[in-house]
Image (tube, rainbow, N blue to C red; front, side, top):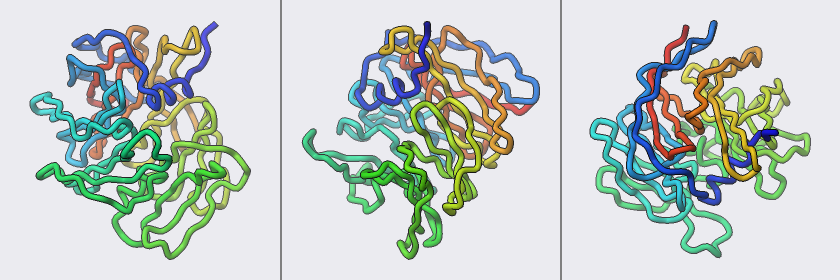
Length: 301
């Protein structure tokens, strides 16, 4: 029997487990899903090493990626398909993020393995200078995108594992989840009105203002919101032995009604961590079987 392995893929990134041998291939176009989306022109953009967790730059010309071993931070220049290491700190590639203007990259930094709480460092991309940052390490994904003082930052309370929110200027803070659930990976919607959170292998949509649960979104792990905030791109991986990923596909969730549709049907490719480009025209994802990063055009049917 196959077991669902969303927590397995999450722990795989935390532990930097090995994936299998790398291949540089061109995948066939995914078959259309009625009423859904189709991937076209799916192409590999890395080779020779194993990478994970792609994150688009705001202008769509680069990807942040994590090495599969040690999760060190790299950047892929899509025009030339060159990969450059930005940080050799273990774990720095996990949930790294761009500033809204693309001029800076934020990442978690630990000086040594004994350091309990990470700091946030900022890399100025013009000269690769590393500087300190005061961003919340438990809410980096939204904190790195907050621009105005009244923008919302969502974070994990590391003691209770509840989800909290605050305005960027710190003038107001509140609880988003109050049900005692232990959540991880909060993803704030583009309009900041809702947040998808994860508990075990389940996804839930909460109102950011703290008014409560909106709906259960099913089983999976959300990788990215669509730029218009109408869909979530998720993945659902499997394991036959509970340790090694034996398959994974991408899915689309309609946030309004929770309807799920297939995005990929590729048994030889184990898609993880889908990321939607800011202009809504492309996605990037990892193949866990090979460690290759792919990009594709995404078209609504």
